Image: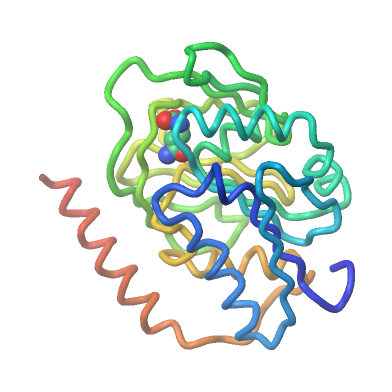
Length: 244
Ligand code: GLN
């Protein structure tokens, strides 16, 4: 961390925040404050420069057109790549995930360059959108319980050699490549298709980002009664969706 305050940056709330992805910022902020951390939250609108000195950057999902507009702006702003060079943590969802890759298909049906911060590229699925609840086992190196979330995307994301899948789907489409992978990560940069918001359904994920930012292996426990209730309800519903 750069100073005593944890700098939490929410990138482009005006363009990228579908399906309650704003909740990701709220949960990370809350779980940091519950551990007594001082948090500076920086909401960066798309007409503002992305700061380079953040500790954790969150990027949400978006519809196809806002996704293109966001990519156009982020490509000419050196802030996010510089932050990653400085060791910042970036967690991206759906459209945000696709933008962090090398390229995706935009709303005009054209190939649109991303930031290349994750070695992935996204194409457009020819079949039905991947819509529904997801249940996925996380890469064991990350030491997290199963991920629960909600997906809604046409894009299909192909992973290169430079990343690992974030998780393996038990239920749901994930990256949509048919190989059972969901999301991607490398070092401190993460991408997922999970909404929910994903941090509310998986508080251990929020804690992972905090542990990386603080460079600690554990955090003081918190009361997770409400998170646990939400997780059990959604995981049960997801299993029913699988059996339907
Ligand atoms: N527009 C992208 C797609 O459909 C991402 C959608 C989203 O962020 N929910 O693939």
